[in-house]
Picture 1 (cartoon, helix red, strand yellow):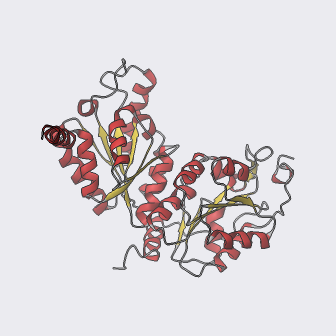
Picture 2 (cartoon, helix red, strand yellow):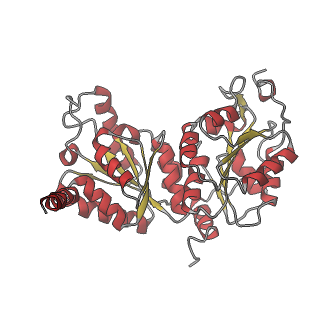
Picture 3 (cartoon, chains in turn blue, purple):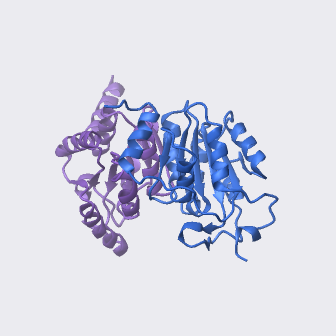
Length: 204
Length: 185
């Protein structure tokens, strides 16, 4: 009963993480950076097709948005997406205030909210039955935050964010399915490939 | 003239202070992004970094968040450093072991040392004792700076080493260098 399905009345469809990630990746035409949070969010990013501008986290739960903020500040002319789980974001809610203060307009944050720690055995998060992550984001100063009602709405919000004048946060309610792939756990290569993809480095 | 002289001597004093050395050394090494969780001892440094348009200095809610930000910035081509105090460092074991070290990110940290040489809060003295064992257990480069005349050498060389070897470094600012925080403050 303490699941996403019973969260306070929300007129949003329960979607699928891999499907949404694939829809996002299909829209990327300008070498946009994408930061995948730990676990299923980066597994599904990997499964959606590796791109040189993808960065996959292998630990440090909750830091997808801070890492993406750093990339967005360093490269203000590049659109930066960050994919984070609801449980991960709960670890680092303060980062929403930092992002609202710095307000990089080239940052789009997606919160994949299933109300559970899927990867550890689907235990409900403390927020699952009581908290609204988009409302938290708005109260943190991220006025440009919204729940996606369905897949078409998600795509619309992603496109809207690409020309927004402020950072965007998109909440998506997702099902309880695990990730569809498994990222190759090679942190040095992940980091080096990402820096090549961002044009910071040239190959040897 | 007298005013100009006063300004010149004030500037000289700033340049010869430990915080002036931090500011100059960061600039010389093109480190622009400075997220921090504040500390009483760091007050003047933080104020001066905010006043200097070369730097983007801002507070974060947690030290771990600041580490994430400078890691992302470095991968994007902008160098950063994180300022914190001892108890803040104690929150970082996970991010050091899962981000900075395995991804080979030259994370540069300045840690204002509390918990020793006149500490008045028992909890601070206890958490201070965890700092060097954590650094040593991860085989991380770290230096405790006690002398002003050695500080520029240590800071400049350590930053350059971190960047060229792609490995994190912690520079621990001893109360012997900064004066620390005393009970009457």
